[in-house]
Length: 167
Image 1 (cartoon, rainbow, N blue to C red):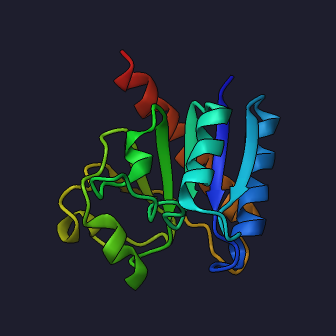
Image 2: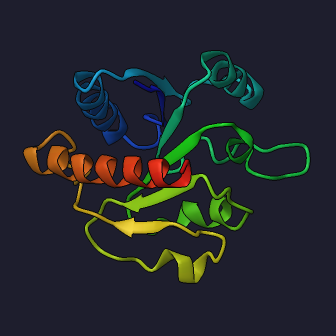
């Protein structure tokens, strides 16, 4: 099974706590090892990246692009440089995404819009190569049966894509 880190930013998005615990519960029931890392605390970016590297995850899940503000010295998205597969759950096209998605994005980063609506983000951000809308995880009730079912669909699609990419 996989080692997974879920990156959240609960100080900015209150639903991250409930959503991340729901995702953790679902993945742990499948036998995966899951750690939630909330980047809301005032640690320098390199400390969070160090923690991620220490845990050596197979998969990194971000909620609302948590951690995308971490940059390399060249200004690239630091999460793109990690040797992990990245599952990025985004809630629509929030204004704060603009500054985060205009940078070069790794091919190992898969994006799922969990609003249930297609916001056509690849049109706005051409480096966003993998973008899908599968189900909906409403921020008001991220632990609802609908949200659990939607995450199961996303996880199935993500694992299929990872297995296909690995040959």
